[in-house]
Image 1 (tube, rainbow, N blue to C red):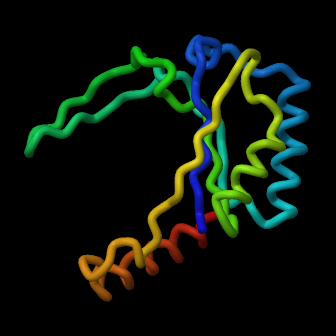
Image 2: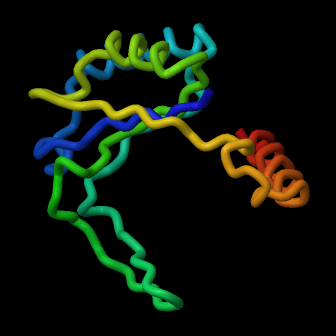
Length: 141
């Protein structure tokens, strides 16, 4: 199963406080372990929400909202995309992660939808299109 592992933002990450060398070194070693184990598919840190935007949908209307966004505890400061056997395996890997923030922090793990999760609404044509696009994007990496 694939899971998205979300590093929740805090006041420091939203203020643009950069991690110190020691944490970057520890995270680099952790990422190497993930890659060697065949777990990590992708991952990156994110700039503070002050550099981001949101696009709000209301019917056919679209509106753009510039950051920063108020609820820091709901924001994401970084992510990984992992391939794991189970949620338990993902939890065990997260427990081995260095604390990504200076103070208390939280990491959220969420399963990624797979094609079969969509049932019959996901037609063979839509599956074929998605598989073709996935192949094209993997060639770029």
